[in-house]
Length: 536
Image 1 (cartoon, rainbow, N blue to C red):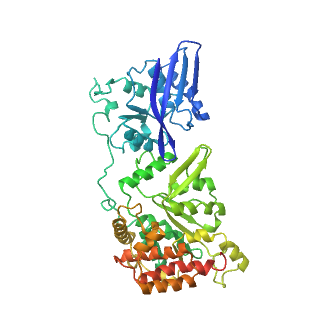
Image 2: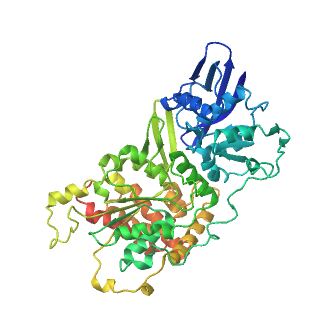
């Protein structure tokens, strides 16, 4: 007997459909799997053989051949066990359905016949719905994330025997499913719309606690740094804090998630697809609820930052998509790691090239960095700093000018005085208050750039900056003087314009005022103070 079952493979962010063919015929007992398989997929035949025996379905002494096509696509991962199992059982007529054309099957099988969770289920289910599949048979542990996809029936099973029993309930694929036992547990998603996450709530409708566990009102002093942080989040501008140890840089960064707008359903789906592919999606949560905040240790490798493997999986850059990538102690990261950020910061995409092809992952994130001004942390305070000029130059020289040019806002975080420590929470704004202004600024930007492939001021190109950051003749003369005095690059000049546009948006102004330009220039002037004579 011959049987065909559909499954899928993940290639970057896309699902590629795989046809699992099983042929059972007379001849010398033999079980072989072919189709450009990785070692873990080749091992599936032993897992499947043992799982079937322990589930009460011993393989007969026949010739069994399984092919996974197309054969020019490398099959990697843990999702092929269950489709191979179903295909063999269907070929042996233990599963009695005429065909399984409306099904896509995903899952790993244990030796005891249990079905374990698989990675990359969410993008596969989304692609299956688009392709016209009506049902998806998958592990029970993946059921919650898959049920967030509308328009496709989701069937979660925890054992091979459950999958067989469910498929044998089938009467006719065109007329639905037959169930003689009223209320059968296997029909929870059949003949009714699948359960879905409520898509009607926008980022403004969802409730946010008034005081968060990590709130900006808990930070004493550093008003300039907090203001710069607000501007950075309002326009999604890359942000760098420089200051001595204990000045509150990490505290401020850790509170940024509290002022980020809540992601829409579409954004949550996109983020959740990434985490599903990476195997980092929590089974009990379904979709990711909050924007990512990734803070890798400075010992992270290039592969850990960008993504790696023979079939690359997402790295920290992609896992930060839609959220924040926080690099604490920036100069301690390897130079090769930092330089990998340059292309994603410009293009919003990270591209990994392997012999098997090119893999593109989304990488639209807010980069937040913190660093000391020298190895001891106290430069330029020569009363406390013991570093030589060469040591300071070497430390700051770890940050290249091309990377600095991609950071829109740099601000100095000075030592906090005793008087500032005495401030109470009532003297500081809460994260909720800051977040309200940021949401208003985001609405202004979304309305301004409607119909274009951008959402925030930081994404403007040079030509778009000229259009949307229009200056008066007097302001142009002023910026010409600043350009020469600060020795700006073209990229640095447009960064100032874009930050000034965001400052104006926070005020609700249509035009950029001179004071907005002055504030934006101040955020760029710190570069020259610390890096002017070190990095050229």
